[in-house]
Length: 400
Image (cartoon, rainbow, N blue to C red; front, side, top):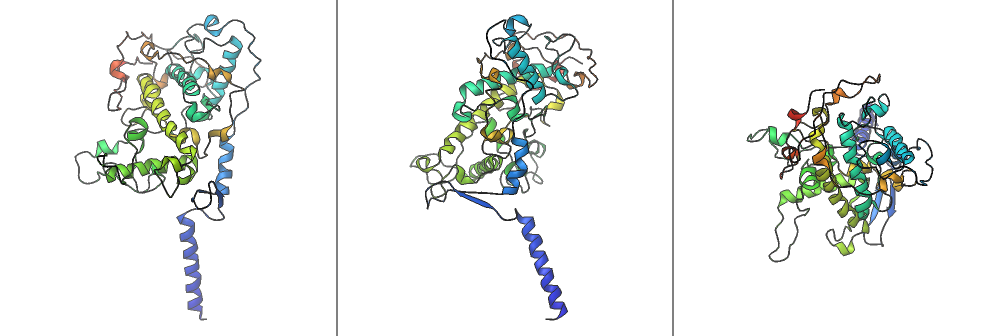
C-alpha cells in the first residue's frame, strides 16, 4: 500500500473516531431488562456518568444527634414569631435550624443569612420570609404528596444541597417576549437546537411554563375517539420536550415509565408512570402555591429577566438519578419536617429587604429600615396572575 493510501486510511479512522466521540457517550454501556421479554422495557445507562453523579447524591451528616422529644417547652412558646415550627420542642427546633444552616446558608454568613443577629425574631431580612414559606411547602409535600415522594419524603437538602438557591431552577423564557411581532429571530418557542432544557433535542425549549406552571394537557398526536379533542403537532412536540426533560432529569429512558409498544396505554405502563403523573402536579403546586406567592419578598437578583422567581422542575430534586438521593430518607434524623401543615399566611407576611441588606460575611448587621406589614389584601397585586405572571412588588420593598 502506498504511503498516500496509508495516510488516507489513518485520516479516515481518526475522523471517524472523533465523530463518534462527539456524537454521544463512549461504550461500554450497561443494560437492564425491566419487564417481560418482548415488551421492550430495557434501561440503558452509562457507568461512568453514574459514578460521576454519586458524590452529589449522598445525604450529609447531621450537625449533631437529636435526642428523642420527651416533652418540655415548645418553640412557639419559648421564642417570638415562630409561625410554622411552633409545635417543636426547643431542642428539636434548634437542631433543625442548625441543619438548615448547613443545607442552605453560605458558610460565611451562617444564621445571619436569614436572621438579624440583633433581633432573631425579626422578619426584616427577606430570606427569613422565604424560608418560612419553604418550610410550609416541605411539610405539605411530606403530608399530602406521598403519592409521589412516598414515605421517603423531602427536606431542604433534597433541592438545595449546600446552595442558597438550588442548582437546577428555571425562569420563564424572555425570547418569546423580546421577539414578539418580529419575523426574524422569532422562534415562538418552537424547536431550536442546542437547548439544555430539552436535553439538546430540536424540540420546543420551554416545556416548563405550559406544563409545570400552567396545566396544559400533556398529549401527543394520535388517534382520538370520535368527537374527542384533536391534538395539534405543536402540542405534540411540546409534550415530547417535557418528556425529554423528565427522562434526562431522572437519568432514564422513555420506557422507565412507558411500554414502547403501547406508549399511551396506562394498563401496559410501569407503576413509575403513575408516580410521575403525581410528580407533575406536585411541581405545579410548588411553583404556584408556594414559590410564586412569596415572589413579592424576593429582590430582583433572585428573579429572572421577566421578573418571575426561580422555580422548580424535575431536575431540581432528582439531579440525574431516578430517586433523589438514591431514595434514602432523612426522616429519622430530621422528623421536624413531617409535622403539622400550617395554613397559608402569606398575606400576613411583611415584605423583606433586598439582598444587599443581608448581613455581610463579617457578621456586621445591616441597617434595616422599619418594615410595616401590609394590610390584609394589600399584596393582591403581587400574587400570581391567571396567566402565571407575577406582578413586580419591588417598588413596595423598602430600601435596605
